[in-house]
Length: 362
Image 1 (cartoon, helix red, strand yellow):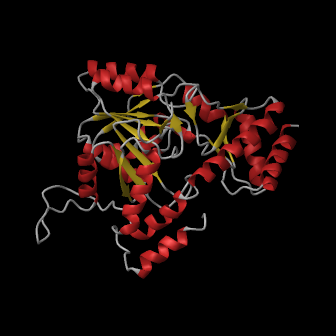
Image 2 (image 1 turned 90 degrees about the vertical axis):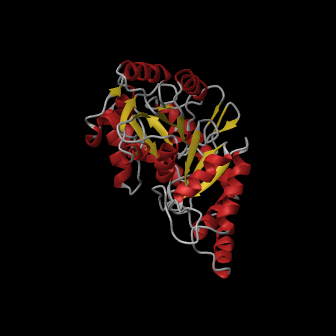
């Protein structure tokens, strides 16, 4: 916490605004709109997963449809596709960003169109805060008429060619889960340049209640609006967002400078035009054995590290789904490791982590 959160939460209690509406919700949305700019409209929701679900619903995804999804990601990017009765089609990553490969994306689009199953949407993810190649993805979106859900759950504070992540796709989403760069405990947001889309999103997120003195519903809705209490936490967190980004980027630079001399690690560099919030510092080791040796050595000292995401096309739950893979994400999963990256890490924490890694490699 940054320190200002309690003030906004206390205001919610003092004014008795506890429900999923109120001054903090409106204020948090305004703070995010000001931060992202580009005329974006923001609807604060209960989670990033809810935001993806709503985004797909707003784009008309339904039963029997196919949706292309980046394979190298967390399952929350893909699960909402199934909520709507649609089927994911997974696309592998490119090596220089670890995000969706434009070449494989186009191959997937052409294959599915050739089979008479034009994808209804594309879910592309800014993984670990690193922006994907938005120009290339949006060019394909426009060429084939397929909208893009920009999953920026991990990328608040990141930019692509000077433009904030969250403002690059047809509809953007943020997550404020407890592990994100700022948090509301649980929460998310949907971003759109179209005020009518925001209005529809808020309508669906509040159980799709029609304008009537009684409870009347002409559409299926969801209970997805963010509470005024949690939005108060978000308002306080926005005051320290830039500090959080600076802290995460400093963690990355420390690890890169401290570990590059070992010759055992490859760091994900920022391509030209990309600015990553470095939500997590993720590295590649030479092989699975080295990765596991480091992970287990850290675990033995009560320091958590994790392998990179296991690709969705390898997950049992999605075993029957089509995939367009070239082995990139499988290699990343086998060799990659996320190092401790919290904004509140002390220099002693960082030094201790690096020392254990050095001792393990000897």
